[in-house]
Image (cartoon, rainbow over all chains, first blue to last red):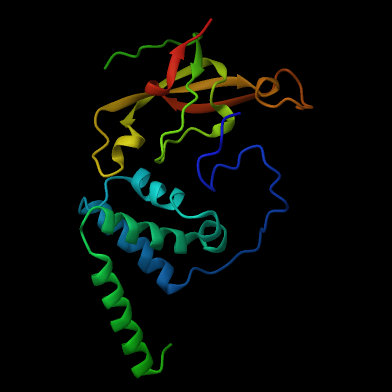
Length: 108
Length: 94
């Protein structure tokens, strides 16, 4: 057995019980799914392999603490920044703008 | 594109760890199996990272006995893993 590559490479390790509880998909999760598919369609990212890569580059703590679509969101941001589609500054400015709008509307 | 390996041939999965997504689990690296099926072509995962995946690579389904993969395996000798592996991860084995 070779050294694991990233926090996802778990084959052969004790995994514990599997949580089989059903859960609803939140609206923001549909939005992330749509953004990834749009980015693929527009060739801003190349393939699900590239989305996978961004997930596998997460730190073990991030990987363990994030839900499925949180990992997609982090990977999409990382990939678009790595490819120069957006800058970290643009992303953080946009997050600030959305937070400010939500606070103004009393949503957050 | 001609397939390099044929059904029944013994192959070894490379034991390497490129620091990008590569679709080969560490537990299978370095192990020998038999080509169970010659599958289609797909872009090379490693070359999709800031790239377009070209050139496309042949995929094979490789059969490895579970007893070969896991030292303490308690099932029978007839239990196998069948895993799809890209051609550039395989070399012929005795």
